[in-house]
Image (cartoon, rainbow, N blue to C red; front, side):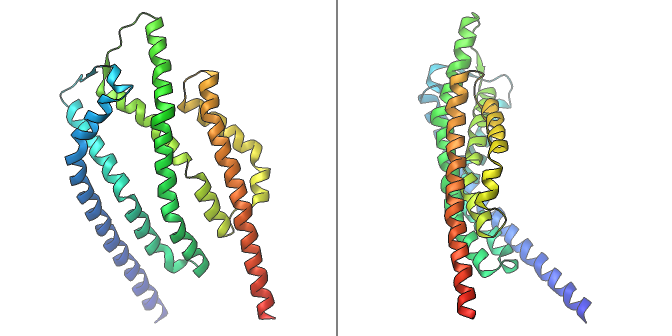
Length: 251
């Protein structure tokens, strides 16, 4: 009987997962349809603002144009559907979480989306123009002709912007992991020197090979880490106070 109940439970989870995957796919496809509509407008806008307005975009393959058209549409679809995807994932795993973990996960979903968008904006408005300007100056100093393919241009941009969008999720991730007891502010303090080393490597990978550029990326990442430590202290203190209140109430 117990094995039969376990089998039914597993089947119900599989059916629920399938249902949520279909819902996610439906929302992503609807968003993709909207993305296909706005993709030419987004491309025209990016071409009208620096650094896109300063260069001529070329295609070196018959597929480059449609590839960029579909890439912009997919990025738009993922950005628009991200809150719904996170909510569906939370809804699926919430049964295995404690009530406190459920509320924490749901509460941090909008903050996670907001931090990701802020990171994308910082990457596109600050780091990407700085990186492009640096590489363009190097090209000019070597007396080379700047002929950029649209696929290479967007590949260069995405390699900078998307990692920064992910990096800006750090405070939210740290708060959530502290809330459920995986991290503590003391552990984050002990990890600081190793975290700084990782941040130095990340900053060197996504910024031009020049000290000022490294610092302009490294300093915001350090600030994000220190904000994460501060928020971890706040969450950890509230968690301990709540646990102490529960213990005193049960006595």
